[in-house]
Length: 123
Image (tube, rainbow, N blue to C red; front, side, top):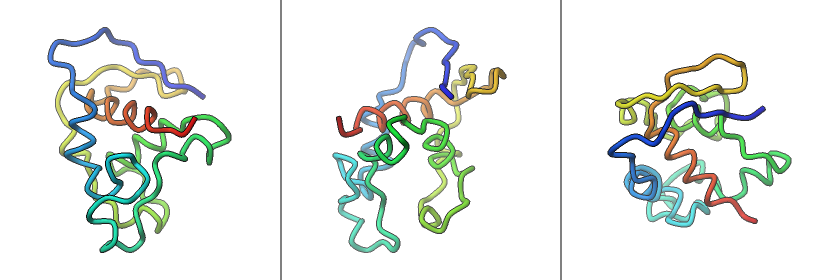
């Protein structure tokens, strides 16, 4: 189950590192291991984003990551304390096939954050 992005590079592409620093690093840490400056005060602790692929049988769980970031994935208590970022990620949309053959308009910033989290994965 893969994600196919059906768009060309857009002018004013988001800076994934900046998006991560502004929205995620305070809790998940700059390296994504869950050791950000706010992590000690949180319960449950932020998850280690660098092991998502390993914990998912060697496949980066892009759809789950995007759903967690935008707030659609709130099925477990583990993620209950993570804020919803969907409202912050509005703007330019690109059509994305999330594995079901249907092109779904998806915020460019959400895709950029998911790509950045994928880049943090342990090799």
